[in-house]
Image (cartoon, rainbow, N blue to C red; front, side, top):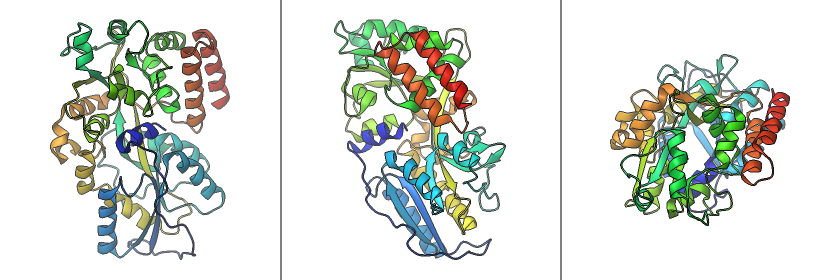
Length: 397
């Protein structure tokens, strides 16, 4: 869900369907234990943004003589198209989806459990496979893992008389700094939320409430920061890029993305996710994951391909773009692993919280976004929005 903002930032434009092959001919069952035959893969992105990925797939094809057929989809269409394919009995063998989508598909018995003979789960950082597990059964492996952290503009801090080398460490300090960083007309703000994005709304509510405050107080706090009326084609991240927002909560990808936009000299700093004063750290996180369809006639090869795509070479090339495949030792995969951003990611691992991993996660995220946005736009009080969110939560669970 948050990937729309992210891909927009990386590509500075909307993604389109560029290439792909559907299930246009029948496939035969393939023998277990040997990669062979054909594998259909659906993922978001494009040929332009996935050169490294395509090179890896081509090498797999050459080495194992497997026919890998890629279908690139705009991220906003991926879930709907995949649901249609499942309903029609024609899902791809392999697909890349957000962790929030796994529980619903697992409950409907659409996913194949991870084949541990083709792919080991012991190679992943503790806890990073948790959101891809349902009823104790692992159904996917993580790629593009992102715990949240604070990005702040050092130039804006200096202009406001704040120490650019001492970023806020608590939510209380965030609020105090935002007051000094917000202009009278609110065209410049301190912390800007990612308004209108369900997954990010749920993650922020998770961080604030699990961190030690009530839902009403969390919504009250959020309503006093940022400005939902500010506009940028790239959302809150674009406002940070322009300097209109002095702070934003984002993932590890943002630093490399700013560099790709020609902002290597952007005077920004990074800091760990804030916590309530005197309270334990809660770091909201999301991950995309590889899954395999239960109805795939070539499950072993599908998982074998996924294992190949998660190998050391892929970890290294992805890390340079700020994309984390959280296998053990990932920080040693390249120079980017020693950056301050990746150090924050590593330190965050014990405090990561993926939020509710239930079949109704998507509906819950939409309810969270509705609550945040209604309060931000003055359409409801925090108490009213909290009551509506609680009611929606009871129905979903």
